Image (cartoon, rainbow, N blue to C red):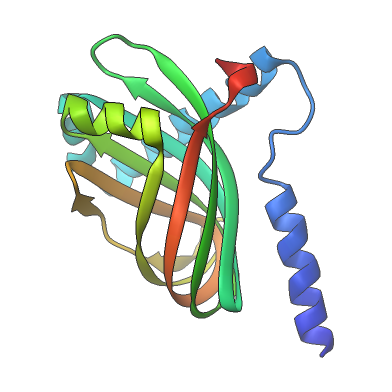
Length: 185
C-alpha cells in the first residue's frame, strides 16, 4: 500500500511539473523554444533521416508531455509549439490526454509530428484531436536505460516519441486534445 501511495504522489508531482508555471509570455515561449531545439537535436542524433522528413514537411510540432498510468486509467498534460514551414509562424499549444487500458507507470516524453500536407497541418491547428492506441515499455532516467518505441504515420502525419525519464509498462487507448495557448500566441 505504501508503494501505491508513493507512486500516486510521484505521479501528481511529475504531472504538475508539466505546466509552464509563472513567468511572462516571452519567458514561456523561450522555454518552449529551448525544449523544441533540444528535442530536435536528440531526434536527429537518434534518427538522422527525421531531419530531411521534417525539412520537407509542410510543418511540424514538438510537445513535452508527462503521462501517468495507474492500473486502468491514463492521463497526461503538456505544452509545445507548431511551426508552419511555409510561413515560419509558431503556434504555441497546450495538450491533455486521457486513456483507458492496462498499465502502471509515469514518464516524461517528447512528441514530434511532421505534417506531410497543408490539410493535415490545418486540421491539427483547427481541431487538435488525436485518437489512438499506445503500447510501450520504458525504464529511463537521464542517459541511463531505454524506452522502446517506433515512429508511426497516420493521416499524413508522422509521429516520433522520445522518452526523457520514466518507468512504465502500458497498453492504452487514448484521446489527446491539443489547443492554442492563448496567452502565448
